[in-house]
Image (cartoon, rainbow, N blue to C red; front, side):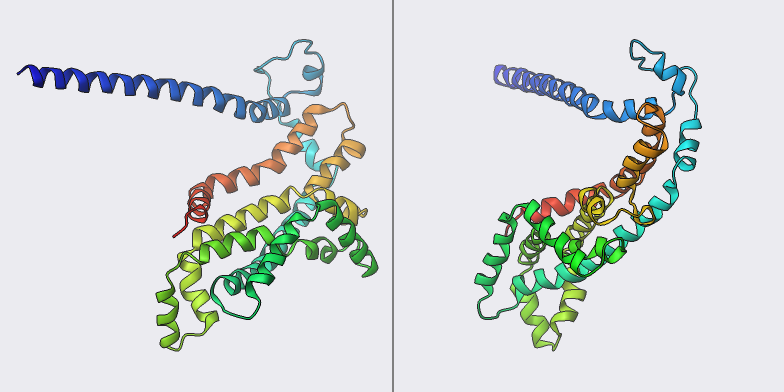
Length: 291
């Protein structure tokens, strides 16, 4: 009887400790979430304040009783923001599609095919990751300029159609598929391309989706390279459009209108992440597992 009572007390004590630890954990997670989300809240709040109301605040106000959407109208009228959106969409879709065409077969070749010098080639390939980005930008700029591709979509797209890191990530993921599946497919007369399309990609779908979304985000936020190879507003992306808005659109003082433009540009990426967040987490988790 005493043993049963002691067991119940111990169980209740353990549950209480777990509840306390959970409460503390959720408390700090909530605090961290507020810290992370506050800049987004402040961005949206500023975007719905009028220019006069914002400038009259000697002490920042964390709410507004007179929201306005005039800043969002200005974001599309002061500068051709819609055109920048279209340019960015073309750049993002074309670059991501071409990158997948390049890196998926490359990762499959390194993961599954056997050819002389494969390990040496892959080692040298990984060594490219150690080259400073600035050197790559300089050489790419010289190449694009010599090819007379400045102020063209091809000049924007071509330097971004491959990624050593993404090839490495996919290779590690492809290698987790049992060899027996590949050998069985070869016995049935399946070609390597068909095996890649019918077996490898469906199994490793979350990782491919993750790579795709990360590339989309990378293209959407691209700033330095488009700024170097384009000085024609007809080829500006949204990231460069923000600078154009600041210099020739609203001016440096109209912060609410600037924030409205930033909100408009950020919304597609936020929606993309919210829609595919589970696949992103699954792809990252699968890419980190071995065996």
